[in-house]
Image (cartoon, rainbow, N blue to C red; front, side, top):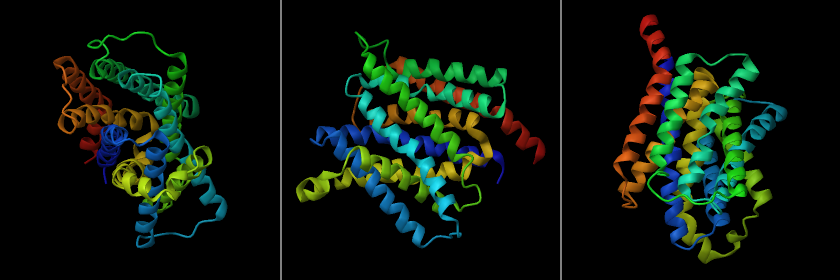
Length: 295
């Protein structure tokens, strides 16, 4: 596979994450709590990926190696918990802006760890992405009042943990089959979620059967596909470009809100979506040119 193929997988992984917010809103409107929605998502997603792993190619790894990969999944679990916590005190349009800061945090991590200073093209791409995210979130359309400091902190922390997860998924378990690695990452996310929010809802049959459809969808698109696609693509594109590609999350979230929730999306927001897609294209352009020259 050429690098742009791996980049496409990471892009699709970001798209999967963009689907989540719509079904989280549907679950909330059905009367389920944050703990029930988050717990069912991670639990059912982890069960699904382990079932797939039983029939997939695996390799023997040491207990320590497996534990390291599971530890790398902890930031994945924390991201959902922190982001949903920020939504308790922030409007969704503001919370997504704080989460979206992972775009530049990921490049900063790459700069600090690998001493790779972001190119002018990558910086330009990040600026376009951030500008597009502000427009797409619609904060200039709705009246934004006071910003909760607590909510802002939770939102920024979710951006940090998501950036760390993207970075770790690109460096740990490179020789481990992607499905097996994804299962271990998901297990790490499940452990931290269960420790912080014990899944008491499992003992209530009515709640369990009610949240099951939402948990299955959220688990597939939030726990199964993203770690799997990131496990395949991230080691080849790197955390810097990887964070730019996962910006596909926000455009998909906007489109899903319009199609499924019938939310009215203003022209300025659609322009923001176009900007984000343009920023992703610019960020990936240099690598695509290399592939064409080498092909």
